[in-house]
Image (cartoon, rainbow, N blue to C red; front, side, top):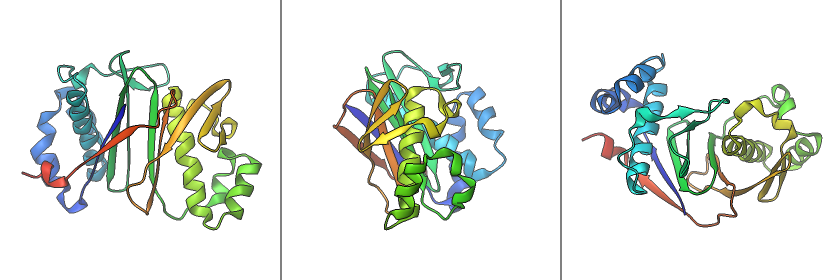
Length: 216
């Protein structure tokens, strides 16, 4: 069972969130957080770590310290071989997925206008045809984008993988000889999001954490 913890924050509360909760992170993670120049980026980073701490506690690994995070050669973070996690944020939302005995990746994106001509190399010709013929091309683009990005997070190679080589067929994604399975995340009509797993995992739970929990 994959569990997804997510929250939504108000940009007007960014200073209060940082003032009240940044000290809960290990010192090294505080320094990394403060290296972000944009305060909203600091909040996204902070909330992602707080959600990860909540997720670890929920699945029985609360004793693992956040500063034990390590990275593979492609910069994918990990804490243990017993479970996998993935953090994503866009706009005012922050998500963290966690699951045992499988690999997973999660991606969310705010659906907002973009210039397709600047993104030609991340979709195949057939995918662009499908996007342009869709009733809502922008939404279809972000559907494919979040599927692909979630898949490369699960794969653990990130953008070292050429997105144009990833093949999406319904709820199945192919990266070379590896098959991944996807689930659509429904949480806000102005966003697109997908969970991708190594197992045919159709059961997952989503837990929304009210912003008020961070603003005591």
